[in-house]
Length: 348
Length: 216
Image (cartoon, rainbow over the protein chains, first blue to last red):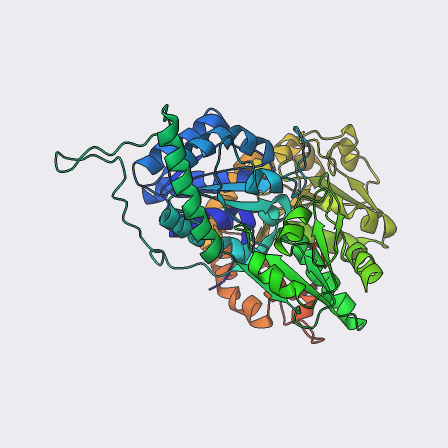
């Protein structure tokens, strides 16, 4: 039976059903319901919910739990993710899988508490210091939030790297019907590297990100980047909506893709050949789908709840073969379908 | 006229019901809607200020509602609901016991002036899907509100995917919840779009879907 869930709650329940029993968090609007949900559910199923003394403590508890081989997660909203960035970098440097959820709000600084997508650069390019990437998934419905949580855990385990779900305040707060998976449907990955006790039967496993010899550090980073190339080749995901005959293709993810979809429908009613290409993975960026679309589209329009952080990635993906335009609102404002339609019509 | 107070699990559809009740009452005397939600900054009745104003409904909302300031502050104007001639007053309480805390601050006034405390339930809403969960949650809400509920409204729905059979199938759940809590089941709601032009079944009240997403 379908149930009505808030995006934040759905993320929590989906994580539990994906086998996560360790949640370490700290409250912040508009993400708090996720932590609140976990605080109610985890004790009932023998899991651990721990409200840490700070975001920095929480992310390092995730590091510790993940090092011991369990599925662990944390969640926050924009300013809190900035605080967690050090721990995320340490996890990347230790090749640890984990799930980090960012229910974005307006920034910079304390910013506001309304929805935003202004952490795109942070998520895809600069989640912390050093040479590394994290997997970034961008759901656009509450159902997709459920589906992507287990995918994110599985993908993180497969490649031994942290995964982020980049949501926004609207997705976190809105309520939609969802079908939840049965528990145990997730893939379980062997973790022979985990530091979970050797019982005198094997060598010590050491989880570490400190390498003082440059040659060794370079070797490890280069190995990681080879893995990233494999991730780019196999994990790209995007949804195409009415793209086949489209002259103008909107590129949008998350909540702004819902607005864009409405604008596409309105444009189609008026006879305009407009489509939507919705990245589901932001890293790896779906360059393959964009290159294909650039074969016939005359122009792209990225629609974002930011000052235009994804535009350059679209340009790079298509090698600037056709013009890429931008429309966005920021500071916590969601663009309206009418505004987007007006921008599209300028390009038709 | 007793003051109508709407409470329930957060996300059960209180705000949509409150907006329907306020707009229905508008036109037959003064109507005041009090947004008492000091917890949730999203999807709240004060987001519909323009709609309410156009229909002549007075809105009393937390001082910083609709801004990005996350401060639970209620305006002194709220005391005016107890003044003679206040007309029809409908209070939209915040969700759960946390949301009902602000209601507790008004409990003396409400007891003096007379109130009906309506508990809204939705069998499709996660964490309050069983009559037992509903009864347990009501006890927490009543404790925080320092008031006792007087009736139940069955507001079972599945958002935009609601069909008539969903609401019909929720009746057993609602009746058991009423039995467990010892409260009368006042009525059930059915979204007007699920009726396809038909009349609502007996015991059901048609409600418009007023709380919408930004992209609709």
